[in-house]
Image 1: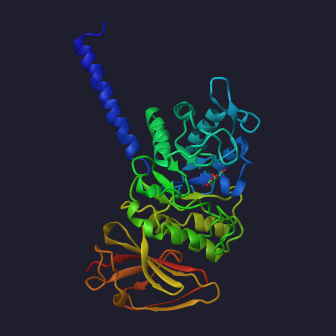
Image 2: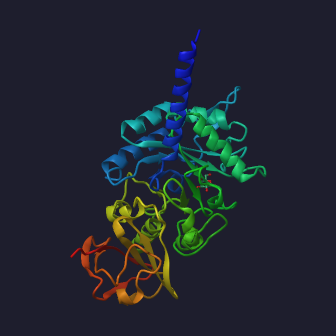
Image 3: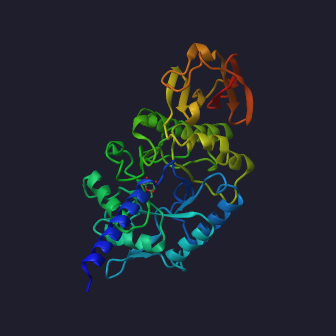
Length: 402
Ligand code: GAL
């Protein structure tokens, strides 16, 4: 029999566990999550072998070193449910089972992500989680899942906020900290209700491997996505991020210049950085883009402030992102597909607008080019450079101490 004293101790323990747990989920994704997801490159061609090789590659190619950690299996890992409603992974593709795969990923010091859908079916017509949210969440937790991407196909007219809240609560109830990625394509303005339910939410339909042409429904180019996400800056912050979709760097349609622009702008927008290419066999330029630690540092800055447009001159844009210690990231974006942007930029004339913790009149700032990896001068002299068609120049400004 439990004595009064013991009963009180048990209550205190339960309370402490609840508090500790809610803290652990609430402090997840303090900076935008980084990792890899199977969808953009492999679609339904996922398997245990592929995922293990991707985990190996992430360790050996330095991606892990610069901050990539989640390996996410997207759609098509699941084939049905058993008579008790338990979700069944495809035994042909994952013969050792999902738990063993999670263990393998963890043994590499990485984290494990999986995909499901709030609807009755996933977008590829596999079983969705509608009606099975708590049962599925328990299965994920028992497999060691650290990240769930949760889609919106076949949603049968559910209320989006309620549907995502249900799965969010189901994940919390497992007691395992699991990053919750809301993927309803921005349809129901998740930026208005997603904070506290999930840690990131897609703001748009799917990215396609295109820089400036939109192809079909669910297919947006890099520039279109930037435009759709640009004004949502106020909704992002530590633990709750706008997600402009996974990266297309290394998927062979974007050229080197466009890929640098894509990656830089995702960093300026404090976007989750989920590589979407075959990281087992990357060419050198792709690897250099994905592992540019100075650009990644802008994305991962601990203030978690999403960058914003500062000036627009036709096809030329200037973006600013406030960083810790009064530093600022600045990106000159040339959207023009045909002409270079010949820049002769008077720092003081334009100032730093909405950035209140930095001032170009009071201080001189060192200017560091984040793609050349070198200091290129300071803000007391004009910046003279040429930005290629569809290219960027990205810099970090730090006050020079006297
Ligand atoms: C889409 C989603 C994609 C991918 C795909 C899988 O709805 O936006 O990122 O997950 O489903 O079927």
